[in-house]
Image (cartoon, rainbow, N blue to C red; front, side, top):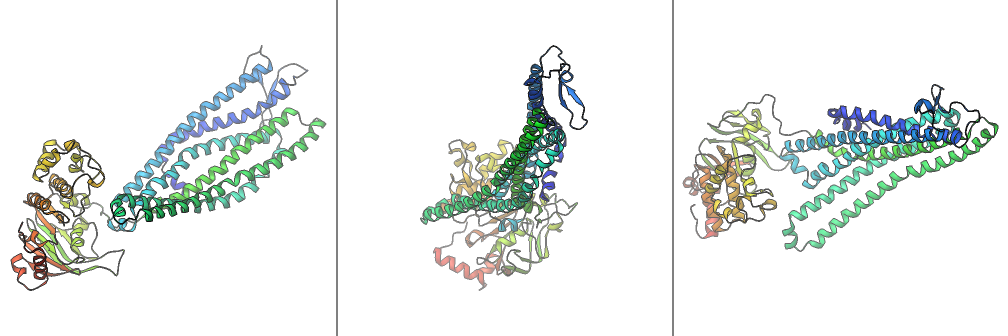
Amino acid sequence: MRGVPRLLSYARRYWAHLLGSVALMAAAGSAQGMMALLIKPIFDKVLGPDPRGGPTPLFTHPILHHQIYLEQIVPLHNRTPWTLVAIAIVAVFLIKGICDYLGNYLISYAGFSSITDLRNAVFDKVLKQGAQFFEAHSTGQLMSSIMNDVDKVQLAMSQMLADFLRQSFSALALAVVVIGNDWRLALVSLTVLPFVMLPTRSIGRRIRRTSRRTQDRQAEINQILQETLSGHMVVKAFGAEAYESRRFRDAGRKLLRSNVRYVLQQAIASPLIEIFGAITIIGLMSYAVTRIKTGTLTPGDFVSFVFALLLLYEPVKRLVGIHNIFEQALGASQKVFEYLDHHEEIVEKPNAAKLNAFQQGIVFDNIGFRYPGAPNGFQIHGLSLEVKAGEVVALVGPSGGGKTTLANLAPRFYDVTSGAVRVDGYDVRDLDLASLRAQIGIVAQDTFLFNDTVANNIAYGRPGIPAEDLRRAAETALAHEFILRLPEGYDTIIGDRGIRLSGGQRQRIAIARALLKNAPILILDEATSHLDTESEMLVQKALANLMEHRTVIVIAHRLSTIRRADKIVVLEKGRIRETGTHEELVSHGGIYQRLHELQFEDAGTVVDL
């Protein structure tokens, strides 16, 4: 149960609610004990009135052995014993109901709030992770942990925690009544508890392991679901509906087996308690008959004892079930805490310097890099490159040469393994991340748009931007006209990943977003790939507007798009092979000339945009 204190630590902010709930649940538990005590006067005084007359004892205090009279609790001297008992019963039920209601609200509020804080903490932690983390964890798995795993913990920390307090105080009050009535009978009765608790601990450990497997199965289903829905066009194009259906059904069967295993493990405690409870009651009744005949035990004492004992077995059963739910929550929380404890690859230094304005340039100073997840894979060795402020530098070369990797080092999506990337003389590892990335705008090949309005996608990360600024950015990106043709104009919902727009329209929305950010450094990563000729021309014009007065790193396979770059850098296998202008490289006889001739032969002509 080492994970329980960590889970409970998220409830520290709500200590007042927890204390209030504990007090109210204690009062409700005491009322539960009073209900058992009120059985005695019903049998001894109401059903069998005291022939001697005088005051009517209600019960004897189990600890102080002091007689408490009905008239002391309800001072109505002219009432019959039954009336007094009836009023006491109503009062006890009323107190129990009110305290239970308010206590349940307070503990549930604290539980739900603390788990909301936990979910927010996990989400924030995941957001801070670098690209390596997202390469190692699928979207479906992360979604399952943030939602499904935390939901299991939420069940334990809200409903089950409330029930735990309720049943614990009820069990304590009823145990006091049982022991106070007859400690010998109580000792015999409670000896069965170890026989229930010992197997419960073993069952709990199995439940925790089963719960973790169940959550993993749930994550597998989420992953299949997310991939299939996101890639539904590919699924249909390859006629893979039956294949995906089999994957989903197989994962569902695994989840079913885990769920059934959990139910079997969790439910076995209840019959154990029922069996031992039945054996105990039979033994007690045999023993009590003898004592009642000898006059050492009244019927009221025995009925009160048995009633309290039967009531006691119910919270014991519930506490065993709650223990199993907590074990399930601990199993689910393992992955959540694993994410919370995951070391962040991209860490901001304390008191990091802020980059308030970009003025000089970007320098890749003898850098080395390898992907942490593939140490024997792609590598960059001793690469040095300077991008001066105001320059347009194009990165070209065969696929897998390191173009995108190099561009991703500037905004510090990855850290170099040797050397340094410097912006205005600062090592990017010494800079405040927010200030660094505020200086960089990115338009990528795979444009990501949110299932939101056109306006919110353009103004992403800049809430409250004036409508005039937003429109001006759209006009410069050559997107304003087609936006107005949409059903709701700028308020049109564009669908998941912008599916309701064409490729060229999505790119122009992304360009408008970059224009609105107005960052002095711009990274264009294959921004015109996969577009038809007309869309490419429009996007190229929009990009030309975006590139004005900015420092640009452009990655391109189509050499026609970068002929006017100030500097063209040819990368191959993580090394710079050639550097120069288009005119210098096209007749150099190297890689760039070969790529240019291949594209010229394929296209028949080269269009200078």
